[in-house]
Image 1 (cartoon, rainbow, N blue to C red):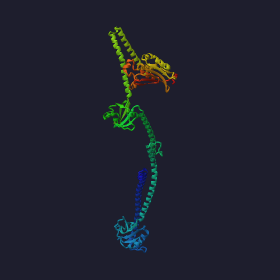
Image 2: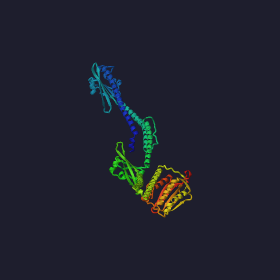
Image 3: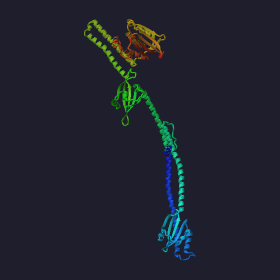
Image 4: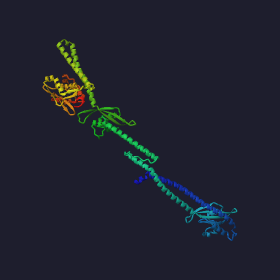
Length: 608
């Protein structure tokens, strides 16, 4: 496999391409060169033979007609033999001079002297004796040698008197061609070798930067952006390296920004006061934040459907995912089962670019407290209306009775006027308490702190209610720790708080009971003032709402005792304005303890 992968590399492909290009080019050049060279050598060889044959035919034309004469004591045959053997000679060639009948008169080869006097019956000779001048023929003899035949007619006075017959071996010509072929092949092999080496070097210069880019790309894919590709030139690969380095930097910055945005979104989702649930187009939950898991009681690895989470049917869920029903109110019981939460779930569809719904975002809002406040507001308005309506109705009925004649009866009229006065005073107390509570709510009631002696303040509270205490035979006691002397507070408002607490204790304590007013230090520089009674107590179910406005445990009895239902609410607001807290602990038929914790401030607002 490694060998196959090696041959698939760009470097090997480039080398193969270069070698194949050089090989094809040299083959084309070689074929053309060798063919041209062979043609040139053959043409030269043939021309040389033709020139000698023409020259010999001219000499022989002057000799053959005088075959009966003696020339220098030599016969014509002897003269022609000397001529063809000495003046007209070719390497490994045979030259024959023939008469008009085709009989051999002379030959250049000593081994063929027996041919003299015999007829040459070859086709080329016949053509020459017929006057045809261009007679050329190539053949291969018994030894496998290629030879060329040329015959020329001998013409004297327009009459053919003989012929010249030449046979020459072409072995040297083809040897020359073979040497040229070998030289060319050697040169081609050397050129291919050099081309391979140069191809390797050239391919390395191209593939080395590509390998660097590949390694860097792999590093970027693994998230390592600290490396840079070396730029080795200004060519295309160098420009590619620069662009890749710039891309790496921009990708690193983009991923860093994306991670930051992702962390921000994750942090926002994790710390949102509202729950967020993201689901895909099939309604399967993909993402939930911490608040949503807490509100729905889900674990980290739970993978539910929206229909299961919110107890919805598929049709209703589909309508919400499509945006037809944007929100729904859901009651959710906590896992401990002691409280029912009310959630508003708002569904928002997520659209792709092609307008298809790809998911849904469900935002969960806990509206339990909001609904409680709204309910309290409605109850407050109803209570105010009721509290005002009752005395007004009484005043109206007694005023009508007086108008109808009760005024004429002195004793009855005086009693009716007393009832009207009491109901009017009750309404005045109610309106006064409402105005006071409104000022506390809007922070319009400023504190006028002054140095106050705590033991003296508690003793005065007990003295103010001495008559009521003696009337019901209730024993009262004041107990203050020795180290508690004076603190800075608004004496009038704290007196109002203590008066309210002591008044309530007297109202709900049976004759012969006991009330204790105490003050002690607590951790953190605070003073706790408590009012404890042995009264009828408060049921546990009412303890959580005892400080609500107009809330009464026994509504009929409280109203008959002249209470407005706002005393504890006003007390709580006054204590909160001082930076303290108020709490109530009670057992039914055993008694109640109300504790007010105030900061023990000295002059200048410093803790004691």
